[in-house]
Image (cartoon, rainbow, N blue to C red; front, side, top):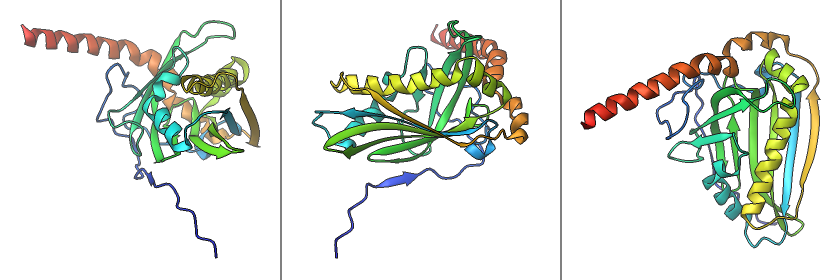
Length: 255
């Protein structure tokens, strides 16, 4: 009888009813995370999609675990310009938050100018995988899994999403304002940037999309109340003012 292969050690984050912010990384915008409920694809609004993006790291002399260690350590580096990720000091570990601020376009073909600040929670991590889950108000409800593995003699890197838009505003943006394309381009950028960082520059991203449930979840229409884009536009001036006043108090203490 063949012996079972030893599986990578992994850990799940403890379940929480609401997110609690205790460690805000330098430069991060702390909005739309405190007190938010983590949400699954069952709690969103739009059709449910599973999307897979993967790239072959041909010729790379590194194991999947070694690639994942680099991916976790340098996670913000591989994001496209304007997509700012701030892991907490503990890094990509179960239970930790990753603060995110970005911008979206008001219409197709126009540079992103509408701010959006929120974040995600790491719910699982092992040597070759980690999964993040979104909170209320995030553009999508669901989770993304980042993985490395070996196939056909090469190490591969993959991003797989299982999510639906959170509310009608985001659904409109994804369908008609270029949001879905922007998301796809983001994962293309992440994977090609990771590959380039590792010295692999001549591979392309393979994509597979499956609509698991084409129905609209009309019960999710009330999710608009938590929309992080709307709340960021309202809350950003107050956040900036608090930062300025906080710096002023620190300077006075140093006099």
